[in-house]
Image: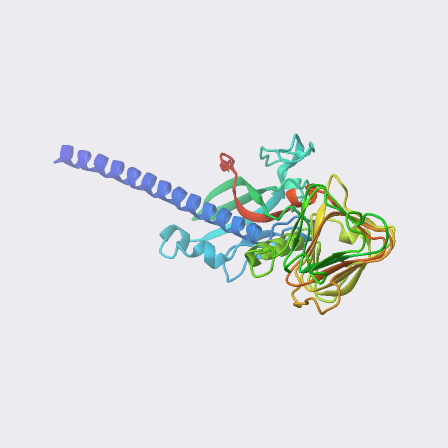
Length: 393
């Protein structure tokens, strides 16, 4: 009996130890799944509003119970939704015994050569000692950010980090110096539109009709080489961009601080400068003389959803001006773009619907393919392969 009792106690101790080890392993697995859910939820928030400017810096987030997370240290409360994190852990016994988490967004600042820019202010390795001191937004503008998530479940603590990238998807645009409902060019014996191999694409037809296309000095006012197309069909109801593309461009402008709501027209050249500038509704918005907006090396796109633009004096714009023409103006209405003085658009001009372009005075349009080839909109956001890792607490 003594031998049997001794053997039984030894077996009981072994089973108890294995049970405890199994419980601890289950707890660590629950914590890992919990902290991974936090990281994925934070990825979703930055995908919806990529912090591309200082005023979009993302606050640090923490949660230890309650309906909402606490935010501190940033301008934008882009915290993961606790309910979204907890949705698959409703019956988890370890989470039920007590759980909390934190989520942080940091720039991948450093001294390494960046992947998508010519700068050397990037880093591709996480350091608990230095990375947490970086900006809460994409300060080096390389479309990469570190996400850090920390969680404790039933006294088990785990930390994971991952580098996330937002894609810049190219927007397919017609290789045209002008897309419009109709075009009239006048102002003297000189060249106002330089096609440089591009097309003039007009939705009106036939092009032989002066109300569709007219040139005061044929062969001089418009200089080739290039083609002239009538009956142009965007395949999108008279709009160069689809609604999804337009919304993506609006979002990008918001994220980089170049979105202007209805009734606002920027008052400086700097405010017009950027990869995407979006005006929601700006009637008779002026681009004033002596302003130089963007550059040949870094052209941009100005999108006017509703409204008109007036060029004054010697203003130079590098890039694409896109008039979405949400007001639906046509041949019998005023011009959506007016050019006064001898300013120049170095790029292209697109006017949607039946909107007309009347190029008068000494205003110039000089086609530059870089203005169209570099137009991108924010696409999907995801974790960079092989960047996900666990950090020792």
